[in-house]
Image 1 (tube, rainbow, N blue to C red):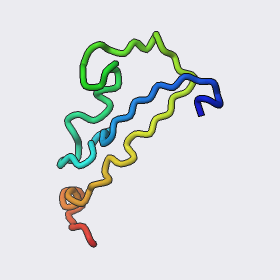
Image 2 (cartoon, rainbow, N blue to C red):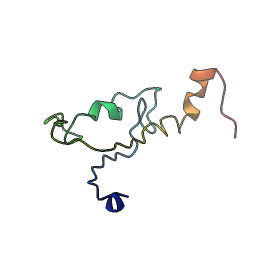
Image 3 (cartoon, rainbow, N blue to C red):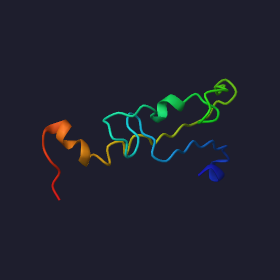
Image 4 (spheres, one colour):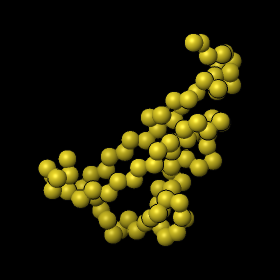
Length: 86
């Protein structure tokens, strides 16, 4: 798509990170979901912070949170008081 539109691409892809819960974390929320990394230039380092004034995109596409609760079987009892069915 970027080639057809003659656009620059900047991709942040982090497998397993969710909006509120990371893949296979045991709780309903995770201590380090992706939003805490939003302003980092390098995800695993808290500094330097990304300078949003230096890069102004024409478009932003976000696909985040689509699998936050994809492994929910262990959480069903706490969410609804029921057990998963096969």
